[in-house]
Image (tube, rainbow, N blue to C red; front, side, top):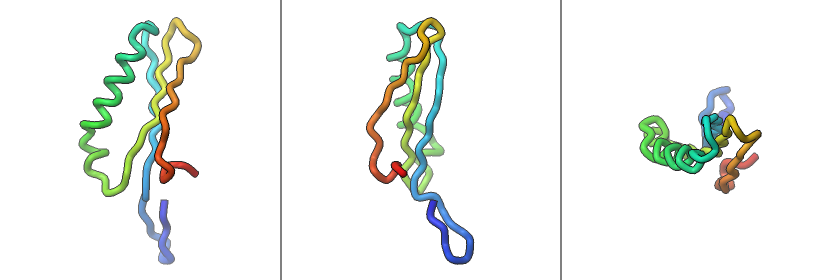
Length: 78
């Protein structure tokens, strides 16, 4: 977030961390593909005047944790 001297400001970028749980680890790849499509078609993300990125995690009920770490552009890193 960028702040101005008058106390106002604006977002310069947003990094979302969505978490999804599926019933079966066999559908994790499908869940990730659907998330990618939803992000690409998102009216809100496409309407922002700053970049919106995401780092999704998909977990399966029959697997402890399955995380997919995707590279994120440097403007989203602290």
